[in-house]
Amino acid sequence: MTDLLSTEDYRAIAAGLSFPTQAFIDGAFRPALSGRTFATTNPATGEALAEIAACDAQDVDLAVAAARAAFEDGRWSRLHPGERKETLLRLAALMEENARELAVLESLDAGKTIFDCETVDVPETIHVIKWHAELIDKIYDQVSPASDNHIAMVVREPVGVVGLVLPWNFPLLMLAWKIGPALAAGCSVVMKPAGETTLTALRVAELAAEAGLPAGVLNIVTGSGREVGEPLGRHADVDMVSFTGSTATGRRFLNYSADSNLKEVVLELGGKNPCIVLDDAEDLDAVAAHVVNGAFWNMGQNCSAATRLIVQRGIRDRLLEKVRAEAATWLVGDPLDPANRVGPLVSKAHFDKVSSYLDAAKSETVLVGGNVVSPGFIEPTIVEAARDSRLAVEEIFGPILTVIVVDCFEEAIAVANDTDYGLAASIFSANGKRALRGARALRAGTVTVNSFGEGDVTTPFGGYKQSGFGGRDNSIHAHDQYTQLKTIWIDLN
Image (cartoon, rainbow, N blue to C red; front, side):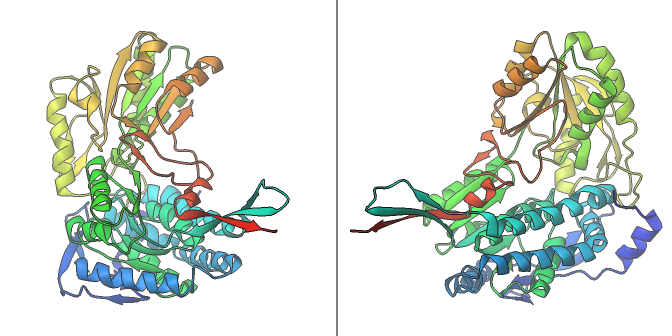
């Protein structure tokens, strides 16, 4: 694990940072063509960090043109796979050299705890870039069965210019999940980071240029969803869009595609993820640690957060006693203090949305928390509620866990599947047959047994139902969404 510094040391690093503020287009930083800017703020303090270029459709056009030129002339798309690999490995090495700076930058801009940035987000971001880089020259094309008079080749080709639209909850990690396979495949990229969290994406663009990524291959256009995301989604010269974010916004990208050039769209959307604990679960201390981590990691601002604890009645009291004790160890406060596990929500607008659920919780049974600690900060909260309550149905995206008590295995599965979403799920049981039956029955893209998690870079991540479709992040399957399959039929007669 990374050796953590003191709060004072992190504050000193923060004080010495210079913030990238301009869009990155065709290998250079440049202001928005309109000259407009918007403020990015520190969620922990409300103070403005920097004024960022507020781009619009003109800037999107410029970035797409640069990406198209780079793709068509082959400066990246037709580069030898080994050369693409070496460039991405140099980028990973530069990110490693600047890992602490990236961690502090991420914490300041997103409100994420420095503990998470240092121990999870930045190391995993670098690992993902390395993993996809190493895969570049290890994916083989195929020769299909054919007669003695024919050869049938099945080859992958990069899809072209791709738009990558990032969420604000994991700015660096989601950047890696998308540019890793997209650049590995040979695509050119136009990326839109979330308006709330732009700084680390711009810093990575700077490091990518230093690593030798050709101009035009990675472009970053900063601004709002309406001014940048929509023009990118509608652009006739964008071949594909990969979007991670809310289900409502995902619907818009489908409309943008339908209204323009029918570009491919890959969506990774919301979740209301169940965590089932059956009455034969063992080591309840470990189970409680997984439950709390699943619910409150990154302040619950996680599409795969385990926000519904579905517990069998016979084990309810013993488990909740352990969960209460574990939740008490998750300290709330300054995200630059490595002792804290819960920081602020990303913005005032999001804080207002999440805190409205605290009002709804007052009509239920509040077991833990339920309070605003200070402006922007909500303490870990656990509420016991009916399966059809607002807290149990809606995606909260904050540090609020809903407990639902059930009587049997079959009821647990039914409650877990009673949702419009299907991103992730967990099941805890000491009975292997029962656990695997449950894992098979749960309608979710990732199901963990006796743990909370998302797998790792080797396993595909994505959802069922309204949690998204069109492809998977992570694993070798992530490369599929950034490539086209071509059949080359050769007649030997």
